[in-house]
Length: 345
Ligand code: PEP
Ligand code: MN
Image (cartoon, rainbow, N blue to C red; front, side, top):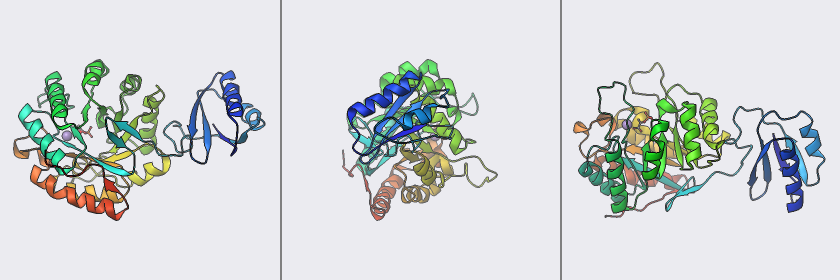
């Protein structure tokens, strides 16, 4: 349920509405926008008479029931887009944010050289997996804490914030000590315990779409994080599994404007996993920006044919350098710009 306040309501009226909701054993989520102030009612059960009781409180314009399964990520609860800062990078703002880096952290040299090149081309955030979810237990599963240390070293050198995946609740404290954004991968999109623990950590979370997760389920998964008091969630479309085998996944471009309509959360696109083919990554990167994505996450490797994971979908540094001016051009065509300038480091 949401309570929409009248234009010109007083602080006292607002407090009275909140107190009335709390009296019913429920919590509130306040969203003060430029033109509307909305109080979201959080918790269950909502007593049936609460709606009519609140409608007669001074300062209340209207009270609406939210029938969706998810509330905190919904536009109804929070009409203004969510923006937050990760170090000095704004996520969900006017500017397109590019995250780039290798699928896996393999060595200091590999990660640092990629970070320098990504920064120079205008990426704002460095990615790299230290704990890797792999289909087979015999594949490279990441360097663990050593990988986190390498990422931190790359951050110290380039100034780029870092994002890395957390696979289990057991690793959360460790990963949170190093990273600026926790990545929850497709395979863990509905690992509800991990989502709740990530919510409690207070660290910003990128929630990737599960490969067979519908948009309502995805937003409900975001609710698990947000319900623990962590509003800093960004979503990332990374393709879904369909009958099509020409690509690794079917990159769901539709999801970008659908999420924009249903949710206030920032939405990123990962055309690397979305396509699985390096030569399809540029086209889908540009399409995602045109469709309104707040940012991109792109796998870049200095030597993709020797990568320990996802080499076939990783851009070489040269190809990433070619893509970035095109990303800037498409961003410009839709009235946006890219957060970071190209700056040699
Ligand atoms: C990744 O980002 O390297 C990754 C494993 O992604 P996903 O969870 O989308 O498969
Ligand atoms: Mn990968």
